[in-house]
Image (cartoon, rainbow, N blue to C red; front, side, top):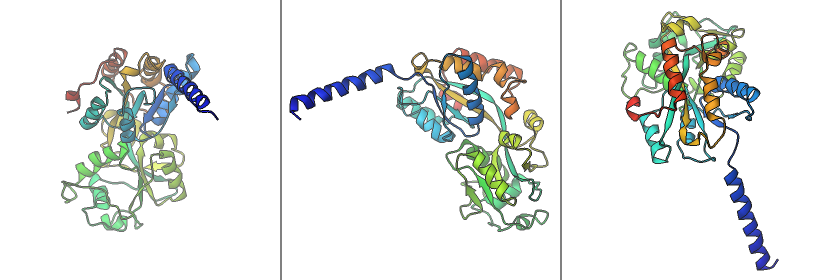
Length: 328
């Protein structure tokens, strides 16, 4: 082929690529937490059915992975929204700022508990945070069986399936269980971490996969969000922690000790560029979705109190920029 023809083809290719970039995309892209994933997916499906916009694409990447993708930059090649089962860290806010993601709106979706559960065919557990730390701490005695932790516990091997370090559930579990229970367990709290000798098995970001593995191995325990226990109540049983059952009412009241807030973050620079972001966010924080009788509550979401619900709705409606001082 002649050089002039090659140059002409290259020019056409450049024009086509430029046109595609100019068109952007018309489908919202959402990444982040596996815990928030089922709620976000339900909202996306409702949004797709009730508006003229295409159903958003929702990916389960883990909270940390989602925030990394979200903060990588502005432009249609980057996600518009990220879900998180813990609050954004100051270091992640800084990463966003460095990459031009300068205005971010934070929304609190509701509450969730982190449960420890096993299959209904397996033994019943009732655990304290100190016992969990003794069983799982890298710096602890590293017992092989639960009865070595406490004679009242079953004489079976310790095997706990849980999320990887990229997960917000893992972050919250380490904070609310490992760091809260270390002193009572007589284990040094500084630098405490989860053991890596096989007693704790990282089972990925797919909580449904953990559920299926528990059904296959009734002696194993799993760590995941309350909504997955709620949706699989016919097959799984949740262990009380510090004497409190992992129930909707106990999490909502604050009595259950291992509970946390759930979030999503909006990239304000994409609003008005990728169509439907404001409308999707409005659906998520609407009374019909995340209110006391909303369809997300049927999926296990613990709704916000009325005053917090209203304040969150105002922040999202006004695309209130998040300040770093709020995270510190």
